[in-house]
Length: 308
Image 1 (cartoon, rainbow, N blue to C red):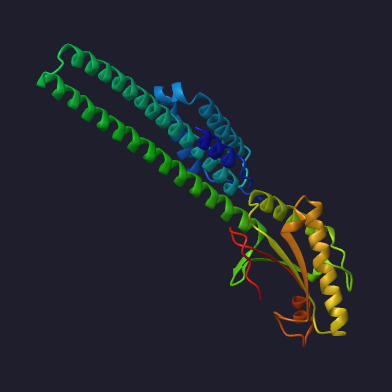
Image 2 (cartoon, rainbow, N blue to C red; image 1 turned 120 degrees about the vertical axis):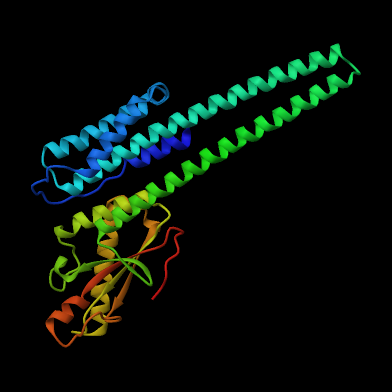
């Protein structure tokens, strides 16, 4: 049950930044499915009896999706809220199945105790008789079968819970990566902050970078095993030493902003890359602007980060 609570908490903590608003079509398939799933679960007396709190959360999640639909919010937002409602219904149903399985195990244990009591009584009454020995053996065999069945149910429930947790975590990760505008490279996930977010020859971040950095800080708090390397780059105009200094100060400015948002200092390092590794030609203004950048490199889920 503890693992299901974690699933529920993780699911309801998903936060998606959904932009835009347009006229909605007459129907929303995702929302219709969520409503149908909720009605089916609500009609099941076992679910009502064993997962009342989970069904209440499902009702609240569905209400939010219905409200977004009624308010003519963006289809993507309605789809997302409807998906969360479906997942909460699934949690309620899984809770019901687990409680029923636990009841079955409890019943099996009671039956086992009863069988053992009967076996002891019969052994006392029929000591030395072959029939009593055979009955005791049958009781033991039955108990073994019951234990095996209970173990199978427990293993199946654990596998289902683990698979559901992995699926939800994958969905959360993919959603947050899209929001961060991160690109998958041979070094891992890379987020680029362009030159437009700094004044000319200055290292202070403009306010336009705040939203992306806030999203990144939320991501890092959700995945504490990941680390960050902030790399500052410059174009080839000016001396190499001045370019290295500016790129380093810009990288450190981004690092300081992340620390101010609550990211642990030990997880973030900054590095001055200077004129190295240009992504465009330095022979024209557009190319030089692309080369003046800060790249935020994220480690993998084990904290391992590839180097240049």
